[in-house]
Structures are given as structure tokens and as C-alpha cells.
Image 1 (tube, each protein chain N blue to C red):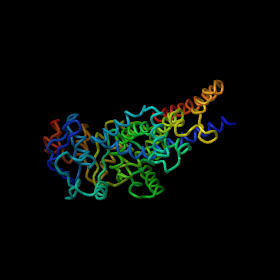
Image 2 (cartoon, chains in turn blue, red; image 1 turned 60 degrees about the vertical axis):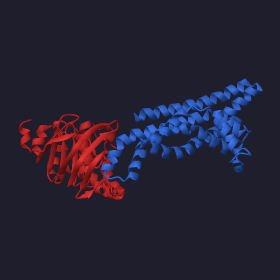
Image 3 (cartoon, each protein chain N blue to C red; image 1 turned 90 degrees about the vertical axis):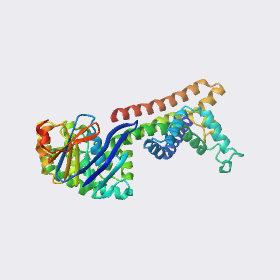
Image 4 (cartoon, rainbow over the protein chains, first blue to last red; image 1 turned 180 degrees about the vertical axis):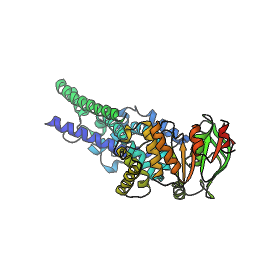
Length: 211
Length: 222
């Protein structure tokens, strides 16, 4: 029963984190996709360089920000699911920005002129591009979910692995290994693997449907 | 009337596609000819108000276009439609594609779709209406993109290599549609039989410049 509880919590936290990251990554990426300026290149390169940032480093930064003496300590959300969601959303932001920017750049090159010549305002043209890019965007979202669901650093440092509250599959595996219960760790690992593999299968099916 | 004055256009990377082009697009049909890379497509996109010139100016009915606020630009642009040589379709049926521009202009979705069905029926192409736009042949897509432009009743229609992918049957429909169109028409093509059939005047481009506007007589020498 606890395994199901942990699995559901893992999926919920990581999917909300990816959704949250999408809310700021989509407009940022859309702006980057239409700009060839120096600042846009610098921003894009920054996100490119930070795609593989160690999760424990993000965890540490979020921990310091939300710890009692940190700048956001007054929010009192350390060791809550909200803190894990926020940490994971920061973690997947570079990946989402890079993917969304590439997607928007491709769709912009195909649809921008069509939208304008059919009489679209810039807002209507942007909506047309986002609408056409929908499937690709879902694929990017699922890839970011796969990155979030398997991470350990953030969940452990800012979630605290509290039973029934912030414990997710990755932190539960770490705990079982610590306890020497390798069979349980292996079972949880298989569930995590199943989630990641299923996500990847969905991504590939979607990808094939688009291409 | 679209007037280009000393227009230059440089692509990123510094490739100059148009050099000091001055030309006023008049009533009737203007056919732009010239070798590949001579700047025909760029000229159409600049005249179609899709590309902002690197230098020079464009005015539509005496109004300088690129200095206008964006809402005015949208209003002016809605009189001019550019049809790409490699048409892009939006996701959905052919009817939805044809209705798209009307919807962007504020026509209700069902009304726009009805109009699209009616337009297709008039051309005896109703069988195309519910086809998915993703499954069209290149010739069908080219025909649909022309219909998508014509349904908007633009004052000016710019066609880029319009007959490049058409089989004889579709070409016949296509040419008939172009001949029936009573607005300002600009066609970039190297299809001289089409040019000789529709042109009121011929513009010859080479190396990003207009080298001749000497009229249809030129065709005889080509």
C-alpha cells in the first residue's frame, strides 16, 4: 500500500513540477525563438549549459533559499511537497527552455509568415504556432517529467524523505539501501524504471505520430 | 497600389537578396521572371509586407507601411495575401484550412466553415473539404492554399511559383482561378506559358535587381 502511495506521490509531484516549469518556460522560449539578439543567445547558451546541472546542487540552492535563515525562509515550506515541486521545476527549466525554443523556432519558421499573410495579429500568430506545436510540446513536457521523476538530490535535500508526506520513489530507494533492504530498493527501482520507460514509450509514440 | 522605393533586403549572414529595387505594383497582372536566386521570392515577400526591408521604403495606397503601429499594419496586410510555393497547412481538414483566414478576421467558426464548403462546392471540389490537410499531395496543397487566399477576397494576391507542383487537371483549375481573380496579381514564375497567358506586364530580375520592366513583348524573346 505504501508503495502505491509513494508512486502516486512521485508522479503527482514531478508532473506538477514540469507543469509549473512549463508556465514560465513557454513564454520565455517563445521570446527566445523569435530573437537573434546577443542577449537571447546568451540566455539560450546559459540554459544549454545548465541542462545537466547536478540535482544535488539545485537541491542545495533551494535548501539554502528556504531554510530558516534563507531569503525565502519566511515561507516555511522546507520539507514539504511544495518545496520539492519548486526544486524540481527549477531543475527541469533548462531542459524545457532548450526544447521549447527549438520547437518554437521550427514552427515559427513554418507558420509565422502564413499566419501574418492570412491576416493574423502577432498574438493570433503566436497562438497559431503554439497550437501547431502542441504535440511536440507535450513530448518536451514528458521528457522533463522523466528527468524530474528520477532525480534524488532535490527530493532528498528539500523534501526530507518524510514518510507519507514527501517520500518519493528515488528517496525511498535511497532509504531502503541505507537500511540494507536491497530487495525493497530493487522493487521500488523497478517501479521507477517502469514509469520512466512508459513515459519514454508515450514520447516515442507521440513523436512518430507527429513526424 | 504597393510602391517599393530603393528597397534593399539582406538575409542574416549578409546575403543581399534585393538591391535598390524601386517598383510600383499596378492594377492587373504582373509576372516576375528571373533565374533561381535572382530575388523573386524575396521581392514577393517584401511586397507582401512579410519581410521588412533592410533599407528603403514600402507604401500601400500612399501609406508608409513599416512606420505604422502594429494594428494599422495588420489592417493593411489583410488586403494582401502571399501564397507560398511550398504551401504550409494548419492541422485540420481542408475546409478548416480554407476557413482559417476568415476566422482570424473575426468571422464565426461555423460561418467561416460554411463559406469554405460553399467555395469548394462552386469549384466542384467538395470532395476535398473533409480531407486531412496532412494527407494532401503537393499539387492539392497548392490548390488549397490558393483557395485559402482567394476566399479572403484580397485586393492584392502574390503567388510564388504557383504551378510548380500541379498536374494538368489541377493546373487548369488553378489558372482559371487566377484568370477570374479581379484584383492586383503578382506572380513569380518561370512558367512562360502561364506568364504569357496572364501577364499585363513582365518584370525581369537578376542578381537581386529589377533589370527590365519592358512589358509582355519580352516573353517572345525568352
